[in-house]
Image (cartoon, rainbow over all chains, first blue to last red; front, side):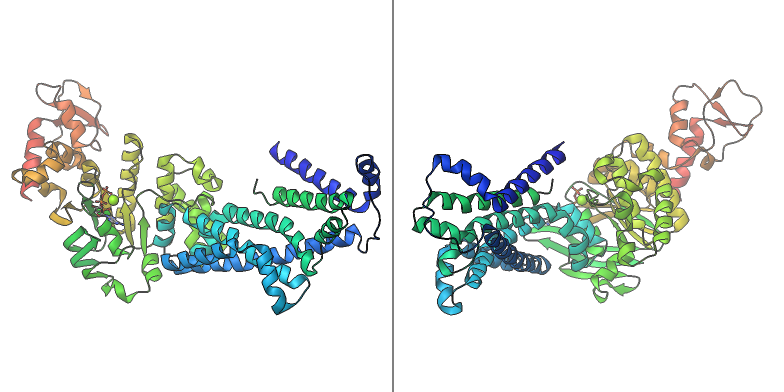
Length: 235
Length: 312
Ligand SMILES: Nc1ncnc2c1ncn2[C@@H]1O[C@H](COP(=O)(O)OP(=O)(O)OP(=O)(O)O)[C@@H](O)[C@H]1O
Ligand SMILES: [Mg+2]
């Protein structure tokens, strides 16, 4: 039942997203009842193009976060060092407290404008939830399970692969889900430094006081975030 | 097979082992017994280096345990932890086979080994696909024993492996374990705080208190411990009675008779304790049938037997 319901909701999100992207004219008619559009500037990028850029940026940055976050957590686990764990958690918390805008602004002078500073910022932002959830997931493995694995003569690496990671998988997935969902919406800010994605249209809408345009680009962001939130759930 | 020399272990301030000397022979079953917190688990874990000792020396297969790679040492030694610790995400089969997988055994060899172990511990073969949460406490413990036996190690460390079983199953599994142990000639270090279990399984019992071995002897010899207050307290004033469970009526060399009054439901395989129980209801001798031979049993037979093992 849950499974079916989940699939159905996912399907609705997918359809809504696709219709919005490809058939926005239908929706525009309806929305124009409530708003008046200025239609002053000609849009340079189609919604489809923005959707492609947005997904690309989110997937790339989240993949990097996963690679870095998991490697850090695994390194902490294999070392069995409480000290290292504290250091890694501390660093990723710092990564979290830095405002995305600040990272972007600071990296522009070094890397220049475009997608790169945005991907960098989102990647740093996504590391913490993944590291933290993975470490917590590994810590909650019952001590007698760990003792048994150790007592049977499994090396730390064998324990990690056969016991620890499979048992921590739900927690790891939660971390990835949180990172992805945050990054989907945080990615909109990238338009200020010349990155692509739905942010481009949102910023343009804000500049020209065009409510329709803002809605046109915000709704797919929300739907995309909800979609990832659904799909990346373990059950 | 296993030698411990003046082994000590301290956790922060808590002294868990305070100078343990113990020599365990090949094929012997040593049972560690003592009150909670006396250091039984610590002693066991020091042997496969689950904990590192502070001083002293431990030798296994005539080699210091320090000289092995730690995983290598642990794979030579089967270990059932207190609390079982089955892997919740793996089936019964994969739990048992985990080390075999690491050692890259062939699938059909694994199947065969798992089936062998399941039937030895009297678990249905249909259980291979069950998950740990679908097992009763006692079944889980038996799977834990199978897992420890998977690589056929010649040494077994068992920390209260039958703790969660109901008395009837417990006795059955104990007897089955005793059979297995005699047949496979394993060297076993077994922890329990159940005196009857110790009596039944032990070749020698090590009675521990506060990190030391107070007495180390065969179960029979512990009968003479009455003067020692701590020991008799822990083993129970009814130790002699409990000891009777270790022996069967066949051990008594009873004489066969031709005339008898009425028969009771015993056989030569019954424990002496059961025999005594029937005696309690009879004024004189009782009689039983075993394989069409009639035997006579009286208090005197039991008394004489106790005298004999006492002075052996
Ligand atoms: N990891 C640990 N850290 C600190 N103290 C410990 C640790 N493990 C055991 N101890 C202490 O060492 C002593 C011996 O513990 P041990 O587990 O060997 O007892 P035990 O005889 O197995 O008890 P039980 O019958 O309850 O299992 C106890 O006082 C216990 O509190
Ligand atoms: Mg213990």
